[in-house]
Image 1 (cartoon, helix red, strand yellow):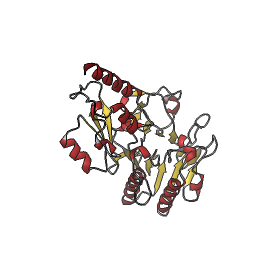
Image 2 (cartoon, rainbow, N blue to C red):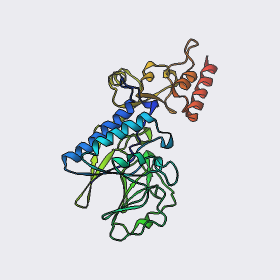
Image 3 (cartoon, rainbow, N blue to C red):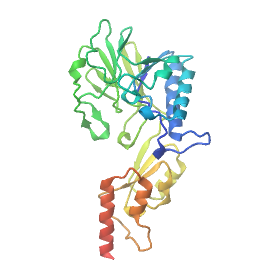
Image 4 (cartoon, one colour):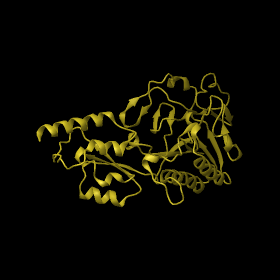
Length: 318
């Protein structure tokens, strides 16, 4: 079987544009990644596909057009594959209801603990009293587990769910955490596409489970997130020609008004350590206002404070 998780289909307006067909460019990339996964399954004669939770990002406020687009996508796959959809925390409308129910016509939607041959699948937050098993040795869950690592921060989860409670299972496939990793018998699948800068350095994947072995298959079609140390002619040329990947450029606050940051896939990063090479002139636009215009409503208060300190310093030197 092929296993992937945490697709999180949505428009992501802060990192996309609307195409001529009226579809978000971010959603199109997600669909492209999904096609890559199913194409691999077709080439390798795999008929069973399991998505282990969080099909959508926006939970109980899902855009109708997005929902219909994704439903049609999986409807096309259902003609050649058996698709199983576990319910993640982003798929839950209420404690007992799933936003995935309309997919029941084209896929097997898991809304309660379910056994399929030697596999047990448990939806999000239904672990308690449901870990017992008979002939099942493979478990699918969608949970945060103590000891798992979040993103590049290396911060370890302090979840109340301890790895030891899954000790009776040969293999546990877990969703929810986006960083692929291994913790004892627990394999965290990870998300198939980078969602934000916290995941920038992760190698995204899906899993081909074959002959009781876990084969990690890296995703090729998803966007990459690149960081650049300064804004220069070489970086400008690279960024101008690239509409597929995302860039974060290390700059001083004086460079915030640069037109390059109007591109949907380019964002500024105000360095704490980088010294400004040019003083602000009275005729220069106030970079604080420019920063607010660019980043609203998701302001980084630490960056905002830094810009304010630089402005005060500049005014005292002129």
